[in-house]
Image (cartoon, rainbow, N blue to C red):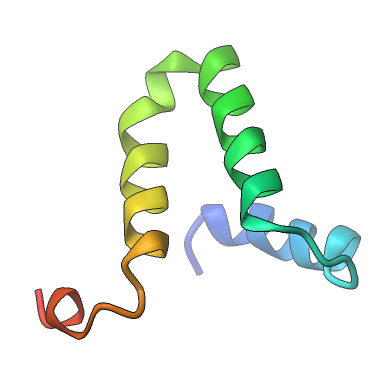
Length: 61
C-alpha cells in the first residue's frame, strides 16, 4: 500500500456516499494548488489523466 492510499481511503470513508460534479472537483483542485503551489505539477497530471480516461490512445501510453 502506498502512503497516499491512506488519504484516498479516508476520502472514500468520509465522502464516499456524496456525489459531486467535475466542475466542483476542478474548483477544489484549483483551491488546493493555490494553497500548495508546490503540488501544481502532480495535480495537473492527475487532472489531465482523469480528463483523458476515455481516450483509448492514451491508455496504451
